[in-house]
Image 1 (spheres, rainbow, N blue to C red):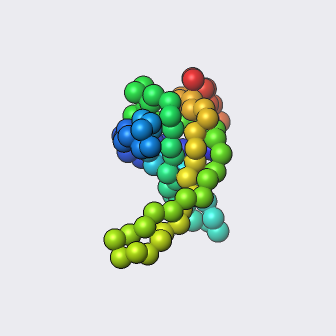
Image 2 (image 1 turned 90 degrees about the vertical axis):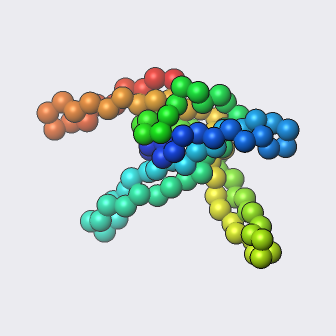
Length: 103
């Protein structure tokens, strides 16, 4: 999936393991209207070289998860568990967009 890192990656300690979490903003067009979808991405990789606004290619698998609100209500969501991430450099040449990837 290709998108922009929407906030600086956070590194909370969960289950005695350090994980990095960030939202990924993915643009799409549906029925002629532009929109953005946000996905929670979780990684055990050190993401110190990645920052808010970076255009990235993420590879991983989807995992359904939930959390419980203080009212006892369960809220479900889908997150991406990261297996690989690469920065993308985009440049426009004429009418074409060229992408180059850097791990």
